[in-house]
Length: 122
View 1 (tube, helix red, strand yellow):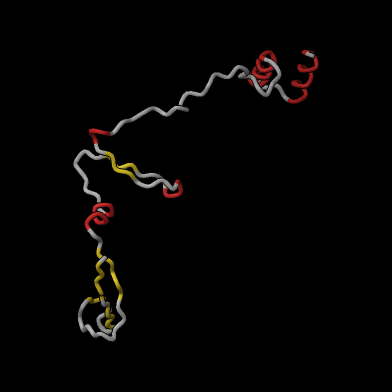
View 2 (cartoon, rainbow, N blue to C red):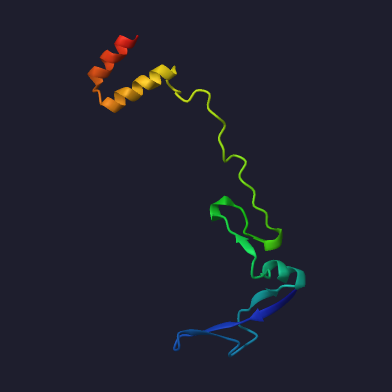
């Protein structure tokens, strides 16, 4: 791997950064690596017009990926349809209790009226 030395010198009077001006071998040097050809293509991939770039949320830990349009395949999620629920009235004990609770909510019974109705049903 080749390295390039880059020297940064700050001039207080001009308040801007200049590189390679007033170079002195005694100045602090920063080594910047030069990427070889395989590393260069991995670091800076080339894109075609119809490429698809998939970015994930940073907290997911999944790296960004590039897919070629002619090889991209989209599949539906395997968990998109939940399995049918055999007891949709859960946590109530039965479908009848669910229907009674639904009626209580629809007609707007207060707590006292609801308690009386439940006592009648049991």
